[in-house]
Amino acid sequence: MSYRYKVSCCKDELQGVRDFVRNTLQNYTISDVEMHQLVLVVDEVCSNLMIHSHKCNPDHSLELKIQIGDDQGVTFEIYDSGKKGFNFKQYKEPCIKQIIKDRRKGGVGLLLVRRIMDQIDHDFHPKSRKNIYRLYKKLSVQPTHRA
Amino acid sequence: MVDVRTDFEGDSCLITISGEVDASSSIYLDEALEKAMNSDIVRILVNCNHLNYISSAGLGVFMSYIQELEAKGKRMVLYRMSDRVYKVFEILGLHQLLTIVKTEEQAKKESNEL
Image (cartoon, rainbow over all chains, first blue to last red; front, top):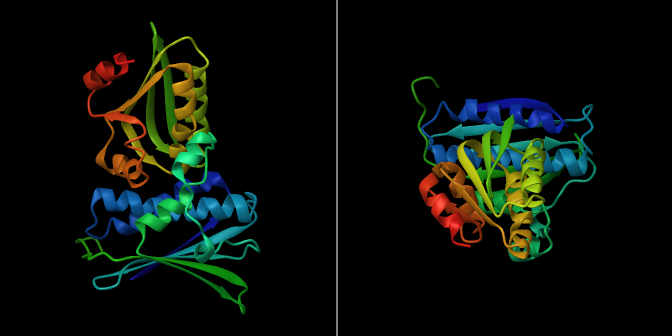
């Protein structure tokens, strides 16, 4: 099954992103801990793009797609037309102790994404001129009665 | 949405977080901790019982005060955290850098060990 959602690039809209992911995943047998982590990775990528790539411009938007199935695990796709995307392949893990020493309040979002998900890909589609971030988690899930 | 309540009592500050801390709402947690850090109290107890969700922005706020706590000789203890929220602290190893306990009694006991 696949599910879609479009969100304006405004930090106040992150609640809507989390609700969309939760409401979708609630139709499947996913534990409370896994649910929090899957909601978290989508929140982190979206907030990162909203802040750094779109400067929180509410006229810009991101599109989300969730693909989920018995043998497929969970795949999140985030479609972004922002010019300044990020490349996970070039991402270097920050040192937590250094962040603490520098008293920085940010810088661990993508690290969480990397540690939670099993596979992360980034593509650029020249035709639509969109960056696509694909996050995959290997999970054996079954639909509940509501799915 | 998040609600962060700050209560001062003697030499302690009790911060109660309810709801979800994300990139949009972490500022409220930051303001509460800043207020506690800039006051004369020596103990900060953070009740996480109704903290339903935390993102890196919220973790970042806690991380940014670790050095200052040490420098000012204050003690911060987080308690009654759900497993799902605790797990996020654990992924980054923050459970070893912050004091996180299960109950309020343990939190009070830990905060006295200055």
